[in-house]
Length: 115
Image 1: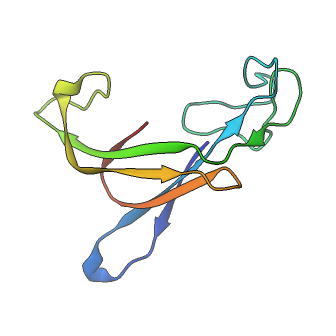
Image 2: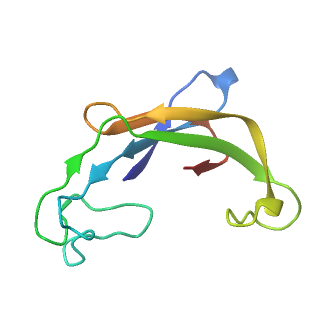
């Protein structure tokens, strides 16, 4: 699950966003989310987090993600699947889920790849 929030900063610091990742794990023998109770648009998953067996999902700690800022490398739109459409900017950031399965980082406005 991903979430975004606005982070207030001083006027001279610019505008930022807070990226929040919550990692859920499926129960044993489950194959995915419950399709009838889950709105999985790729951008959000609703608050009823259950698997296809009806079990509530548990959060997972100690999962590492990489966040990389990117900018367009030309006039064409960024396609994450096509490396030639973007350039990586700066060093990648590593974030790790805590004991509640949550990882977060404050980012300046822009485009990012989350892996």
